[in-house]
Length: 117
Picture 1 (cartoon, helix red, strand yellow):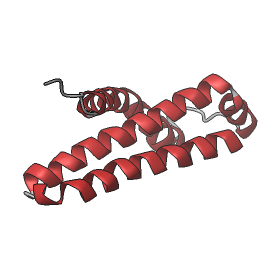
Picture 2: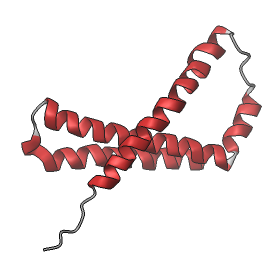
Picture 3: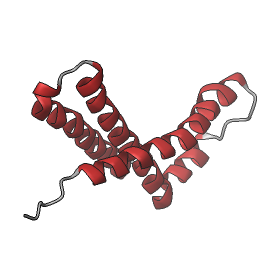
């Protein structure tokens, strides 16, 4: 009796990689754009330089990866918060669809915004 493996290993991989990427990159971006530049601790880049950096395909790929992995990290964490924390396992199918569907929709929106940049 061979069982086909489910998507669980892939979801755990996205969860762990999303947590690592978010923990390493988001605090740096928050510090730079939320504290250092507005308070004048560092001189902010001018608009044309920042726009040139954002036009680079590697920068777009990194930002897309950051958005996608952080969204899937959130989806997996929120799913298990609803399952275990709120004891809503009986609503498993809608929770999975809403959590991971939200992550997919957010990833598509991030891709569209980065392509249109």
